[in-house]
Length: 113
Length: 115
Image 1 (cartoon, rainbow over the protein chains, first blue to last red):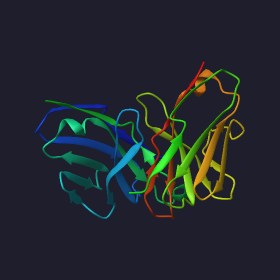
Image 2 (cartoon, rainbow over the protein chains, first blue to last red):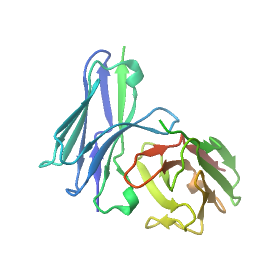
Image 3 (cartoon, rainbow over the protein chains, first blue to last red):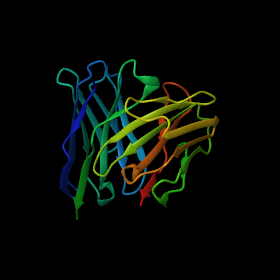
């Protein structure tokens, strides 16, 4: 079955760049997503990338996709304390049930002032 | 962006009772709503997918008689946890989508604690 893996923790200093990594197993994934979850809250879609793209940039966020290695990364430039949250990588498997999402366990990003 | 609300945000109930959680799309019509469960420090696990006016499709291992889902209108879906037990304590999150291929918008979640 589909599986999405992420490292559980990342700690950076304010102003540095953060890179959160994710690997997935389903080579037929159509879309890959990054969601942000703040404490006690639901998920906020940050960005997504279609599987035929290598890179997508949106302001401070850069998504890199290595389809050969099934590796996805999210880079946050100039990380701020407000970026502290849990970041989930997710995929939509090809032919999945009406577009359901398969989530990783999430990476907790801690930003130190 | 579109807004999805959940009610209640936090509920404590006694073992054996039933609890209903509401998920509403506030400014769009949601043809499909998804219900997820999240354990502490764990990922979100899809429980079921519901389309307005149809029976929900449950994921493998999810008891449909225990987790009753109703999607009676284009803006409201409910999840009822029947005969709740302490192991049902979790964070339940819904999401709503307007049409296939469109973004899922997530609710803020409901924390259920069964004592």
